[in-house]
Image (cartoon, rainbow, N blue to C red; front, side):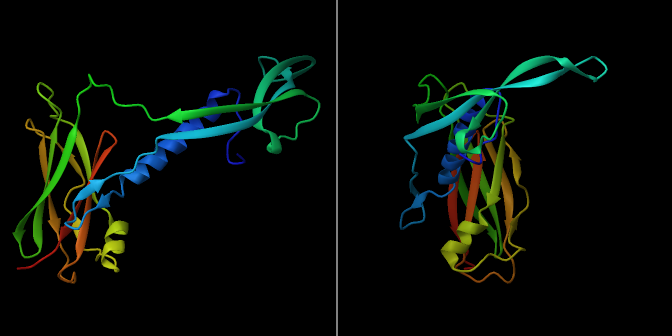
Length: 221
């Protein structure tokens, strides 16, 4: 817990833990398991995370100040601080140590909420040009018009699949796509002249924290 900053509220530590868990799940979402056809077959989810915090609650007397910022040495005020125990070296203060245990549990989505479905497809337009199509649906009566989808090439995943990195000139013509009335948006994909045939290009789209990955194999024929 050395990397957890001190705070004046226990919420500071719980929010820090929750943020770390959220980032870990987001990273898992970016690397789904693919089947032999290059299609997403499963995504791993973190069902729960148990934690134990050993904190020292310290009451520190600090000199009060006047409105002009001058210290008033005869007047003091008390303030609470929470610190990880082994990082706390306060002096001239009263403190108490406590161990807080808990668990974060993944909760199912509200069944009444609109279930957003995100899908990707690629249309070949020329020898080294293609169009990436994004389609988003959210159930009857729920329009996704105006929502922004972030579309990118996952170069790290592409390098892992190809054993070599993609050329810098292989790129998307647009990264932020605004959905139309039908929940559809598209962007051009330009493939470098130096890109060898057979290279796999990992495309990743993100909307409202939901991630979809598509593996597109470049073939000139």
